[in-house]
Length: 167
Length: 173
Image (cartoon, rainbow over all chains, first blue to last red; front, side):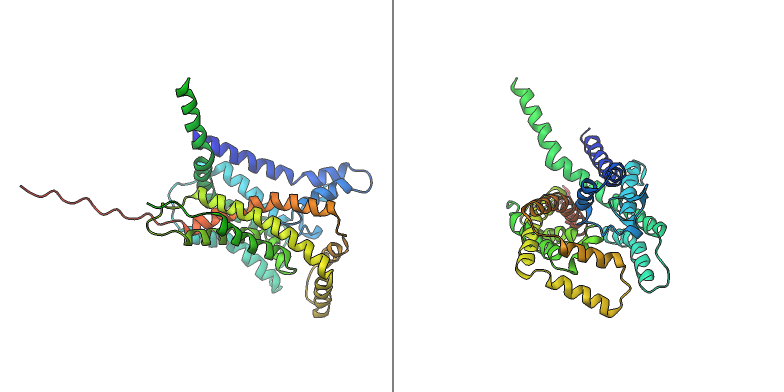
C-alpha cells in the first residue's frame, strides 16, 4: 500500500514537471505584445538549461522551456516511471556501470559534435537524452521509493495507528 | 550502536561547492547539462556524510542521503545567490566581458546564442526583485536537483550489506 502511494506521488510529480515545460510557449503564443509573462516562465528554467533557440523543440513559434536534450531526458524519465512496474527486477550491472551506460550516448553525441565528425540534431539530442532519462529510472526510482517511504509514509502510518489506538 | 552523525555540515560542504559552481562564470555552464553542477554538490554532500560513519554507527539509508542532498540544495541556493549578487556588485561585468572577448578572439565554434546569452545576462540590472526571483527559483531548482544528486550519491556509495557470520554448529552429544 505504502509502495503504491509513493509511486503514485512520484508519477504525478514527474507528469506535472513535464507538463510545466510546455507552459512558457503556451503563454508566449497567447500573449499579444511584449511577452513579459512568458519571459518570467522561461527564466525559471534558465538555471538548468541553456535554452538555445536552435537546439530546442518549438510549440508554434516559441521554444519549449528547455532544450531538446533536456526535454528528452525528462520525457524518457516519465516513460521510465510509467513502465517501471514492467522492468525486470533482477539487477544485472552495478549502479556505477548502469550510470556509465546511461550517459554514454550523450557523451558520444557531444564529443562527435565537438570534433565535427557528426552534427548533433534535435533528434539525436532528444534520443540520447531520452536514453539517459529512461535508464536512470531503473537506478533512481527504487531508491526514491524507499526514501519516501522511510521519511514520510512510515511515520504517518505509525502516527495514524497511534491515534486510532488512543480512541 | 552509535547514533547517525549530523547532516548539517556535510550538506553545507555540498552547498558551498554547488554555490561556487553556479556563481563562477564559465564553470556554471556545467549546470546546462541538466543541472549537473547542482547534482554534483548533492553527491559530494553524501560523500562527506558517509565518511562520518564508523563501523559502530547505524547505517545510513536512502532517506538520509535524500535529506542531505536536499539540504545541500537549500544551502547552495542561498549561498550561490548571495555570491552571484556580491560578485556582480563588487566586480561588475569584468569577467563576462573578458570571457566574451576571449571566445571571439579564439574563433571557437560557439553558438552565437551562447554569446548573446552572456551579453544579455551582463546587461540585466541588479534589483531587489531580480534578487528575490533568483533566490526563490534557485531554492526550488537546487533543492530538487540536490535531492536527486543525493540519491545518485546513495546509489554509488550505498553501504554494502555486511555478511552475517553463520550460526555456530550445534555440538554433538
